[in-house]
Image (cartoon, rainbow, N blue to C red; front, side, top):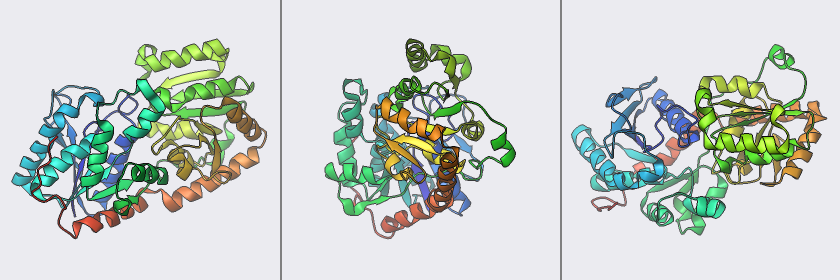
Length: 408
């Protein structure tokens, strides 16, 4: 199958940890490479944000990443990209006229969906859409702090009506999409995946090498909605615990990062500075060692469209204590592979962590169960098979939008 993927702001070539670089980048890169390994031709289209990267970069496994000239060739925030999506779609359509149309175009994020619909509509290419995050959910939880472009929710509804296939990443998203008016019969759930060779359990010697205080790990982008403040507050009730916060900009730029400064200030106010360490961003290959060094991975966002961190922890055989929101309701089997707590509730979080501190055998059982579940559901080959099965439902029939103009 000839597959085009569109990921306008989340390039699979990006360095992780920045405000707009995280789980979506990992997802697009890994899914594309797994599909290519399975014998499919995969091209990822992302917005050119510099002048030094070649027009086409071939990743390991044979995935081509095409830099689309849409907007200024410099980094800009994803919330500034909407005006360039029409150009993005037109460029892809012209490119496909020259090189041949793909069998399916899979858009990642809503703005990618607008570009994909414009190009796909012009050439009759069926469009699959993965939102990764929904504006209606973001607005609900962030209110006036939501910086999304005006009209995002309406655009997402528009995409939901016109796309041939919606690939949701969790069951909670299906509920949100249905409430938005998206036809549930064209929605299928395919979770994100994890590299189970990279994210593997510790050996006995690695597990036995660390002793001492309960080590907690928060991993991911440094943005307020990730709820790390809740973990800092819980730390005041956990006198023997230490917290590692891994993610964000590189270590040499951590001191100028607004969210790092905010969290550092909160830690000082709470009197826990000596038990908190911010590492800055990590190379993806270094993340498994960081996960294995923890006793418990803590993931307490206000909301989470999916959340790859619980899968990475599960791959490493580490239990997760997470907020009972969004995708974490799927990835954490409460009481079996980890534990769920209400969001923004440091008291409930501390109580669960105290119980785990005093029961290392339970931590080990949760971790082993998490790894087994990851092997059954979340390895990339399984996610690849499910994605291909979803594609097949629309590739076998002409696009609903053949010859229909889509204006962005």
